[in-house]
Image (cartoon, rainbow, N blue to C red):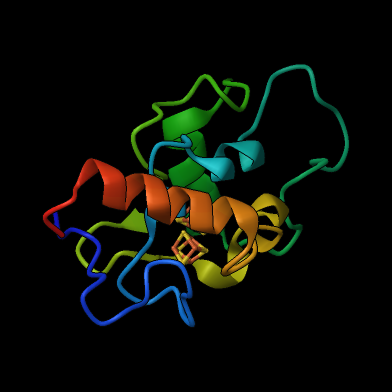
Length: 120
Ligand code: SF4
Ligand code: SF4
């Protein structure tokens, strides 16, 4: 797995998510919100109605029947560790859209990583 590359980026003034991806690790899989759960009737409350079938199948294979937070926490199912990018960025959940580049949570995550990996 590749590590974040901050050599070309200002740690606390990121202009892009390229080479980072830290907020997609250690938080489980927000896409678990899209998983099927027993006992629900009618339209899924979180899953986009036009989410492609192959993505629905992948999510249900991994998380069907689980509530958000019960999935493995290491990194998101959709995170590609080699490119450090979301594999299906256009379909990311709202919580990912709300995570603001250079916002407080972003900067805290980058600072935390740098402090834990001072040689980087
Ligand atoms: S939002 Fe911040 S922590 Fe997340 S990938 Fe972009 S730069 Fe990294
Ligand atoms: S859905 Fe995409 S943007 Fe959201 S945490 Fe997973 S990999 Fe990151």
